[in-house]
Length: 384
Ligand SMILES: *[C@@H]1O[C@H](CO)[C@@H](O)[C@H](O)[C@H]1NC(C)=O
Ligand SMILES: *[C@@H]1O[C@H](CO)[C@@H](O)[C@H](O)[C@H]1NC(C)=O
Image 1 (cartoon, rainbow, N blue to C red):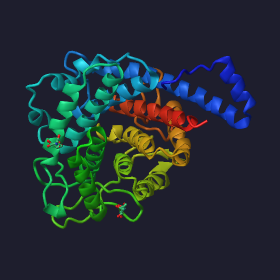
Image 2: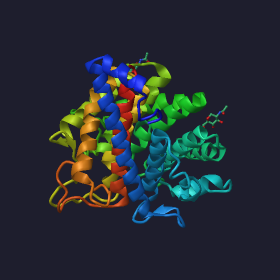
Image 3: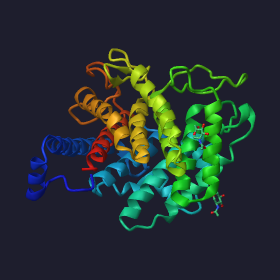
């Protein structure tokens, strides 16, 4: 958190004299500090997977590595620290951004969802660098180049949408949810109308696409032949990225129906993708887990994007609605997921003995969980 964790004597006596609500505030502030401290130890462990020579995480992937870079910067911004700033220069995406002759097309290799995870990471690095008075131009320019590549992948097959990849075999939820987010956020960052036009266009398409099922959850994508919902897995991350995109579009337009639409899906996530109120990916299994490296990061992405959603909704009652759930995930990731070395396993809903998979993706997911839970608690206590 940006503000001091420790209260002055005057602030403390004001809080105590202000009664029960204030002591609750004090308790929340302490929880927030301890969750950020946990995030810090997990980030330290995450970096043991990192190879500064290659700029990659051992056993990682470009898109999950990009999320790790984003999460480290979210943590540094939240905790006012500088510990991992060197990844700006050493990470694969940071080096590429700082080299003006980088061919982003060859780096993303026709993957239009990966391109957008990189955009989000580059923007977060830019936020961090701006907060420290450093030049953000290379990072913003790289994000623009990537955005323009992705925006060019929209066509009329199935009535619209960006293709998942250059193979042109799939139009899916995550690529287009990300396009909603990068478009709406791009507008908020630059004021450039092209971004807002794209955001409205992709939300209109998503809304009519049929990819959200009767439970309120987004399935994976569209059947290639029929353009109908293919009924494939309702991964947790798909239920979070739609919310952050809608939250950003709400900030751009003031249309509160977009927030209600986001919450249809957030509420459905809590109702249908949990066991004992803790997120459970369909591939999570305490006795025989079989999530692949991609799937091991999804729950943390849900957490991070709910926090982004709440930041944009900027509404104390909406934050209060989800803060306890985010806190419960943080508690489960701490007590069930985290091991003695401070890696966070892939399974949060049950004790991990024999269960969790440990990987840079799973630990990145845990890091996002702790940072998001801490930030949402912080947001909630601000309006005193
Ligand atoms: C607005 O953004 C689009 C998409 O990135 C870009 O092509 C265009 O040049 C931008 N316009 C201005 C005036 O900056
Ligand atoms: C607000 O968003 C909803 C949901 O997409 C849409 O149906 C409605 O037309 C929008 N309202 C305005 C004024 O654009």
